[in-house]
Amino acid sequence: MLKFKKHTTSAPQLSTASLPDIVFILLFFFMVATHIRHENAPAQLPIVSFPTVVANADNAWKLALHPEHPGYYFLNDHALTHDDLESHFLKKGNSIASLQVYLDKNVEMKEITQLKTLLHKFKIQKIEYMVYN
Image 1 (cartoon, rainbow, N blue to C red):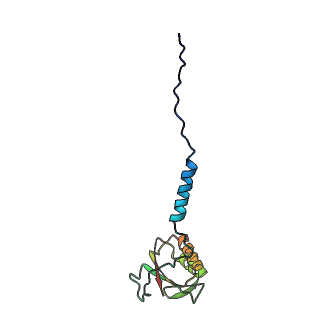
Image 2 (cartoon, one colour):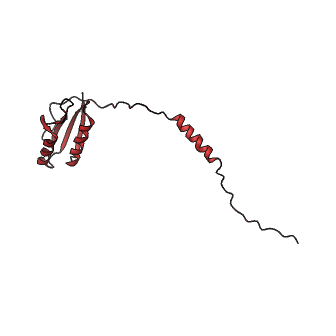
Image 3 (cartoon, one colour):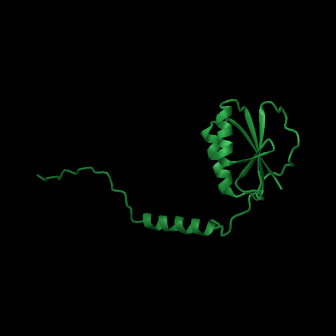
C-alpha cells in the first residue's frame, strides 16, 4: 500500500521584497511634487484708521503701541510704562470688560509678546487687535 504524506496547510507568507521600491517611488514623488519656499511671504494685516472716539467708552478701553515710542503704552491717551500699566490693571481688577489694542505695522514683536503676556496674566477675555499705518 502506498503511504501518503500528510500535507499541512499553511498560509502563504507576504513577500516584502517590493516594499523598498514602493517607498522610494513615494519619496521621489513627494520630492518632485512639493514646492520648497525659500523666503517668508509678508503677512497681509488688515489696515484700519486710528479712531478718535471709542464705542461704548464706559466698558471698552483703548490701548495703543507705537514704534516711535518703544517701551510705552498709551492707555486711553495716557503714556504708561510696562510697570505702570501692570499696576493700573491691578487697581482695576476684573472691571475691564473689553480692550481694544491698536498696533502700528512696525511695532516690534517683542513688545507685542510682552503685552499679550500681561493681558493673559490679568485674564482679560475680550481683546480686539487693530493694525494701522
